[in-house]
Structures are given as structure tokens and as C-alpha cells.
Length: 308
Image (cartoon, rainbow, N blue to C red; front, side, top):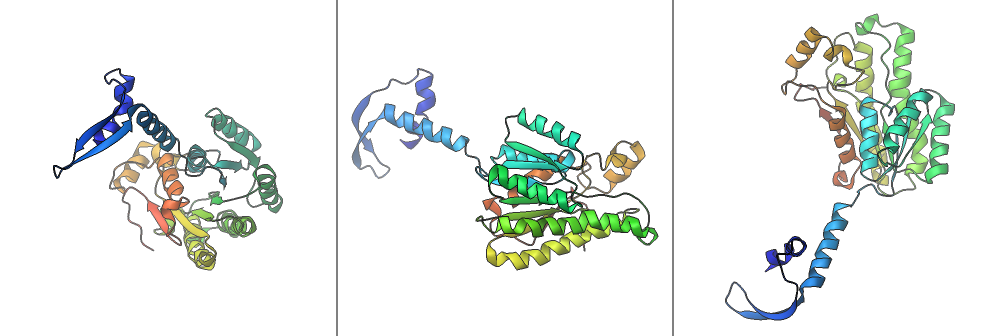
């Protein structure tokens, strides 16, 4: 009987079912009978309404997210995914032109976003990022720290001091400061969440990306330490560690044939990851589906070995 009722909206719409109201005897599986008085028309309307409502449910409706370095690549994909799931998303980047272009793309998709120029290593830019977010939306539920830099390549102990300082200022110190400065706002909301974007290189250093790899290891440690401090307050802190993802950052590994072949040889799935795949993981980590997960780093690398 339930299957018949469940299929009523489709059958009615197709004209294959005559709508009526009646009382009919229904035999159950034990051969007993019962009288079931239903209005098929009303039942169909209710089922159709419930189906429509559940189909439009957005898990981040009413929530506000900040995603740094979100005008391209993984950051853009994360911002887009959170907005598609109902969040009000603040995107940012060092270059105002890039911010404007990203905002335009997302608004064309009818997504609720705003954009701000923000160099995460600049205290004044971070201050403005939070102030404008509060002015526009009045709260903050989610922080995704994605900004990173790698101004030089080479063995870790050949890294110049000024280059080392720049890598750690942007990749580690800025992530720490963003989380610290976001904390007063996150504490005001139930179920707040922070995600740091690290890298599989944080587990197994990439050749010629020594300093960068060490900075990404530090983010895994920051995730562990901050998650323990904030767990009693209900604020979760997790980490995404992507493998080789097809972005501008990794274009040297996928645009040159020999480099691409060498990269694929290290990946059991024999393909590079895509930004949207990383976005799905972040969306999971900041959702209620991950409500009992904190202090974890999820490696998304197509099977590449990741050991610390």
C-alpha cells in the first residue's frame, strides 16, 4: 500500500490514476483486514510537498564562511561548494581584480558571496576581513585557511632565511593569526569549525619543496594543538591535506609531459585530483555529518603514501 501511495504524484501527473476519496478494506500480511480512509488527492499533495522540501534542503543555510585565497583553484572550489550548500561566503585574495572576477562568477550562479582584498600576512587586511564580514552578515561559523606561498624551490637547508621567513609568515603564522582573530566570533555560534589546508607534502616532503613541505607539516601540528584546546567549547578544528591537484600551483607537474608522467607514476589512481574533490571534503568536515571529528587531517591524494 505504501509503495502505491508513494508513487501517486507521478501517476496523477501522468493521468494514469483517477483521483477519488474512499474507504477501502486493506488486507495486511497476516490476512487481517483494516479500514483505511484516505484522501488520495491530499496524500499526493503532501508527498509532493515533502519531496520538494527535502530536495531543496541546504545544510549550511544561514551560516557564514570565510575562505582565504579563494579566487582560484582549491580555495575557489571550496567557496563555491559552501555557497551552493547555502552558506553566505566571504572570498578573498591578495589582488582586488581577482576578487572581483571570482565574485562575478559566483554571483552569476545566484550564490550569496561577497569579496574582499586580503593579504593574510597583513594585520590590517585581516582586521578588515573580519570587520566587513560582521558588518555584512553579523556572524561567523566557518573559517577555511587556504592561503599559501612557495617563492623558491630547492633543498630545505639551502633555503635562504628571507625566503624561509616568507613561507612561514604566510603558510603558518597567518593561519595561526586568522584562527586566533576569528575565535571571538566563532565562540558566539554553535557548532563552529576551522579547517586548515595543508598538503600531503606535510607528511612526505616533496623534492625541491623542502621549506614549503615543513610549513605544511606545521599546519598539521597546529590542527592537533588547537583542536584539543577548543574541543570543550564545541569548536572543531580539522585539516585537509591534498595530494597533487590540477591547479595553477601545480601546473609544472601537469603541463609538461615528462613531469606529468612522473607525477602520475606516484599516484595509484593514475590521475591528478580536481579542486571540486577537495571542496567536497571541506564541506563534509564543516558539516554536522562530521560533528564528532576534530583534530584530524584528511589526506586526499589518490592513494599516494602519506606518513609522518
